[in-house]
Image (cartoon, rainbow, N blue to C red; front, side):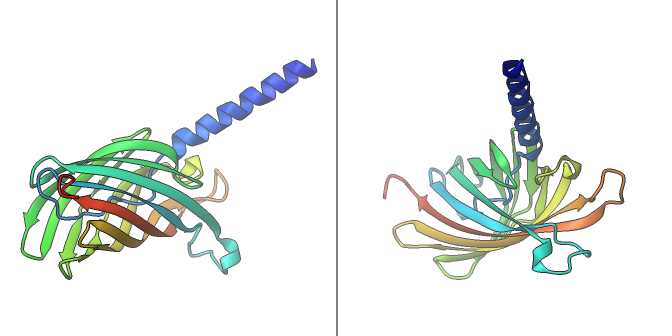
Length: 219
């Protein structure tokens, strides 16, 4: 009898983990950063993301917030001068774990400004955004990538299209080594109880990343 009870408990635990993983699989950020790339260039990197969620009008102090930490990696290649294909993988307390692929299309490119469209999808999530990058110097990029993502942050009640607004800096050394920082917030609707009214809630985050970009044949 005890063996049967233990088997049932293990099965329920496994089902719970799978259930929350299905609902939580969505990256926190819109990384990789929208770097200017020529055909054949690659961009490989990863970063750590930390922050808090449950930030809303009812928040009275830092004690009301819950922390989160996540990791995200990516690898992209410029198929043409205006089209990039990329893979991303993520794991963490608010993103769950998963992987996906996406495309980045450059719509407008000026001397120091680029506008694009980015879309990705993976295990139980999709995301779409409009990246904008400004070349501050030859080695420094200032960017934003506002968009939406579909996935749940910890609780199934938040599983819907959620706005995401980041702003970031990416510095690239002459040898192609890059360092980046991205500050952003993801919005979702939250409720304390299943029957209570939902309220707008934010999940602010800070992402610190490192990468290697450029033509792999010249590195």
